[in-house]
Image 1 (cartoon, one colour):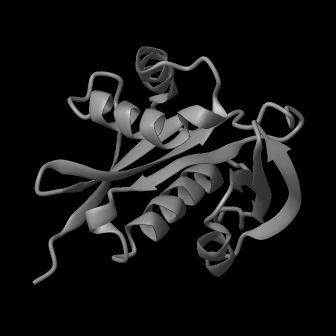
Image 2: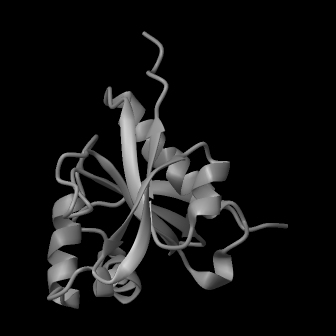
Length: 161
């Protein structure tokens, strides 16, 4: 039987905060020059909003975090004109291939839609296929801190009135 995974909102006082910040720092610090694990933790704590932008979600299995995704105001310095963003989608390697990333993305989309956000953006160097399967469209390709990334967008369906 597959282990149950629950998507929950991460709070600023969560015992999982440090682990999620460590994942984010390990995965993406090369795209944020000057960032330290401590500065990533402080930034993540500030992203733990109660609703809308910002919000951080965590996939939990057997009481342990196994993945995360965020809804943030800005995520790509060269494009301050675009907002808000799906960011920091990450699933532990041993938990991949189970639909957890898709569930995290859908949870962020639902949060955005429930807060009257009509369009989201994201950027990725290597997961374009995942996001295309989930209905995201390529917007542009650019260089960001020495890496080629695809900026993608998704128009959300407004929630029923």
